[in-house]
Length: 23
View 1: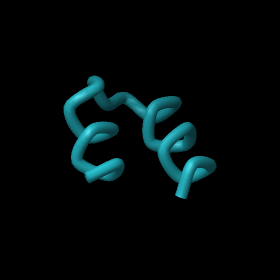
View 2: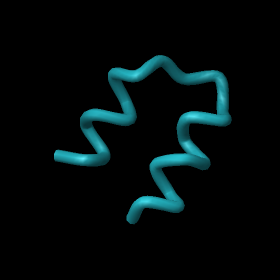
View 3: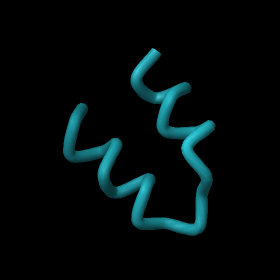
View 4: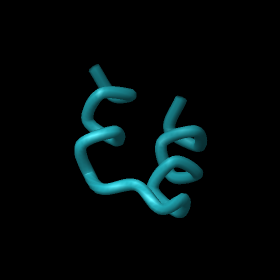
């Protein structure tokens, strides 16, 4: 899950999606 979070962060996406993924 952590790796996915980093990937999502690398993509044109703010911290919001990152938090959602963490949730």
